[in-house]
Length: 218
Ligand code: PMT
Image (cartoon, rainbow, N blue to C red; front, side, top):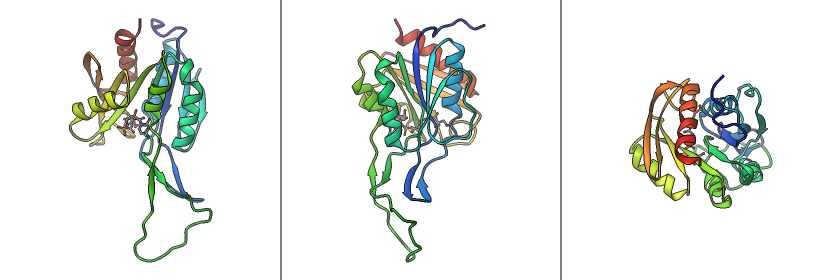
């Protein structure tokens, strides 16, 4: 059995995409499969944590031993997150939250119109920033999906969102990141950084949890 590094700790992880309705049959979303967040949940259970997994719409079985909360939109994910955040030792935002949603959801299926139509979008709430702002004793860890200037953009998000740590992945290729079985991370916290080399999302998850334990706890 692995050392129970997270025994007795409460941990919440968000995973997967959010889905923002345009009308009763259409939505805006992204290619997140949920694999990275579900791997973190499985690994945290293995390390003895009491795990809540808040998931957008994905096609994955629930890792044994965790409590799963299914949501669809960013607003629902925010509500589910804030409902538990203050009681957590660690909150990890791995979900690919849609930055925008439709300004108005059409009540009926949109009819085919001219050759060009415009849909007005409005900004979604920032879930991880809200969690960081509204908790006092919770370690808050975000992810950053980047295609360029990874270290700089990730460090900006660490500061702007008020996080304790951020795990950046390069999402410009198909071998790691969205929907891949592998990942690789550049992890930044306020007084350090660490590279997790490419391997399975399960192994990457184990290494990220070890970093959190080593650098942010006690
Ligand atoms: O699900 P997989 O297919 O396994 O893919 C994994 C992944 C690539 C989705 C994952 O590793 C990852 O990078 N997740 C974060 C994706 C993302 O939305 O990144 P971002 O750089 O846009 O957001 C930065 C952080 O803010 C993230 O922690 C995100 O959860 C959070 N955020 C973003 C927008 C928003 N409105 N609310 C948020 O909480």
